[in-house]
Image 1 (cartoon, rainbow, N blue to C red):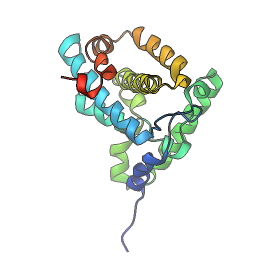
Image 2: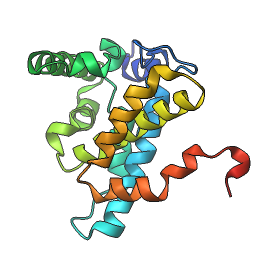
Image 3: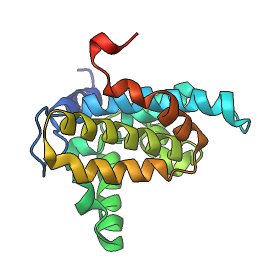
Length: 196
């Protein structure tokens, strides 16, 4: 009998993990949807980095893959809201340990030769530190857009989160984030008919 592995079946379950669990949503978002947006933004930020920043060239493809899998542990842990996750250093450290255990569980669902390929992807923040700020910024951009969409739909539940996330983005020391905010963010405020 052939050996069976459940890794991809688990990854496919990202669509069942709902984000923003403490807040009333007009349009719910799952981690599969969120991860696609983060992957697209990480790809874009890396291209902007390579074209504008004049420093070390990064791989947009690698950033994209990191974005796809950046919340994979949440398939097992669920989405812990940011105010809880970062409430204090002890909770933050303990939650990181929990996420690491969840990542190891996912890796155990692969054959050994595949596990060695996915380990650096799931633990990218430890293995490829130059991509961490890019993917984290893409994650924040995704969160900001979600908050802005909710506020635009009349949901005041997201006003404070939108303001805090915008402040964090405005204070980013990444020039690629500032460029994205200056040149692409306005499009998210337009209706379909207003877009070129």
